[in-house]
Amino acid sequence: MDGTDFTPRRHGRYELRRAADSDVPAIAGLYRSLSQESMHLRFNGRVGAERLGQLARLEPAGDVRALVAVLDGAVVAEARYERLDSGGYEFGLVVADTEQHRGLGEAMLRGLREMARAEGIETLRAVVRVDNVGMLKLLQRTGCAVVEPADGDVLELEVATDEYMPGWGTRPVGAARPWRVLVEARGMWPSPETRALRAAGYDVRQCLGPSRTAGRPCPLLALGRCRLVEEADAVACLLPDADPDALALMERHAADLGTRLVATSGRTWRQVAPVLARAAG
Image (cartoon, rainbow, N blue to C red):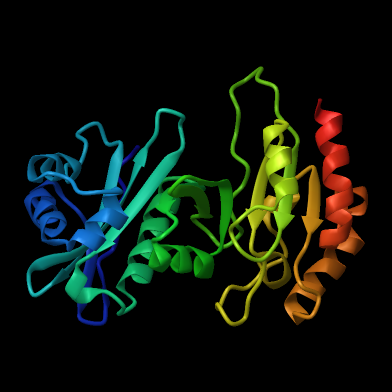
């Protein structure tokens, strides 16, 4: 990745700036200061001091980018993304226990997305524990897609670095592309029908749809486009039609998607999904 500057800015009392190699000891110190619960949520368990020092490093090959928040000269939050062997990018963030619940995590994620977007990265992936309620709520407000449902203690989600939702990614040249099915439904937990489609080999993403109470607009309604919808082969809109934004989205789908709109209620989805699953076989 080419180096890209992140212009330092303030979020309340905090200065947000790009991390440098000289910040690694302070980042390691932040990790070591975490409570047992915070360490469990960030690192999926307890981690020894030596290993935390290794995790704080910024890879010299440029495969890691990090952002820090500084308060009175101390690093109190850190967010980073790193290149995966698959070619995608995974991110994580942590806020000192004393500075949580002050909007700092949201500011850090916003800055990290900006930094990634400047480097031409479209999507960031997160592996999140199901009991990490704070991170899950943050990703819901940001607008995320569930890529892999909970398998044990974690689930995988993606966020776009802009406002148009993450796309479906690319596959190696010559590799067969599975059918892409977008399920728009409240909550992050898949229905049995959705699980069956995954098991049958479909690439299924789940989107929570717009929510005024969560402060999450629909990019298709607000901005005129959504990559998840544009790149899907089939869309099941299972959002409650009592919600005015969800109803507007469903009406937009009915006008634009044609046969790609395969279900508009849980009842029709329970009928259609098994047919799709059998077709894959």
